[in-house]
Image (tube, rainbow, N blue to C red; front, side, top):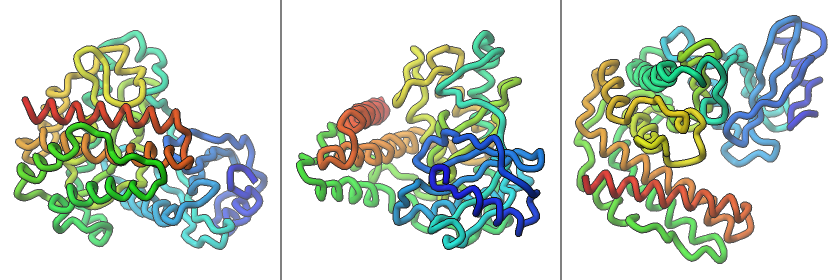
Amino acid sequence: MTQGIDLDVLAEWMNGEGLGSGALTDVTPLEGGTQNVLLRFERDGRTYVVRRGPPHLRPTSNDLIRREATILTALRGTAVPHPEVIASCSDAEVMGGAVFYLMEYVDGFNPTVTLPEPHASDKSIRRQMGLNAADAIAALGAIDHVAIGLESFGRPEGFIDRQVGRWMSECESYSRFEEYPGPQIPGLEAVAEWLEANKPVSFEPGIMHGDYHMANLRYSLQGPEVAAIVDWEMCTIGDPLVDLGWMLATWPDENGAGVGMPNVTALSGGLPSAAEFVSRYGERSERDLSAADWYTVLACFKLGIILEGTHARAFAGKAPKPVGDLLHSITLALFERAVRIIRS
């Protein structure tokens, strides 16, 4: 058993799927940016990656993995860079309660934690990396989700109207954690009111990644191409411009400082400005970008509230205090950015 993956069970299931024979070798845990488990391994000369929920499953873990497998399968053959699904197992009984899927291994690197050559030495490559991130998410937003079989994947009706109330309710729910003093977030109410008063009157539904930032991209080792968008567990059918706002909420400023965890590529300089990122997205998309600031403020608001949840859990001893404090500081920075955008 490796991180909740019974390799003997996996091998037997693969036999039934016609996916090679013999032992699974070179088994290596991978970092996936979430609590979900990723293992890379070899069989019959082919490299696979298996993905399942965390070793201690949450109530929604299996549903999220099933959704990932569904969206990644549907994206096969599109222009969106993504890991290719090889096969999936939606029967939780096979692996002791956890569903899972197999995908192709994407060779590349996470640009927030490392910057290999030639990227490290070439500012023009880093600039193109940023522009390619805009291209990748514009390609996702351009897909007709109905045409690829995702018409029932989400609830796009009223998506924008639900956002502020949904996340304010989430924030209020943190009061259930003992010792949590409530959200000490300057600007929380003002940002919520501004979002409600300025929301777009309409949008074109499409596929949303739901957590689009540089840590969820893998870049080619040879150049600036996005090899794959990863971690699709928050994907839904909604307003794709939320993904644009999500990236802008954490995008580095002119000094290379972004909102969130340290970003090696951002600190190295050379990425396009936020305005250039929006312009590039506009070149690749037919969507109306006149409310780009609204989507950025929404992303700051939503992401800040999500991170505050860990801060609240830390008060109750359900998360490490240093982690809770760190994420709370990021929440404050996100709301500071939202207020600056509103005032500008």
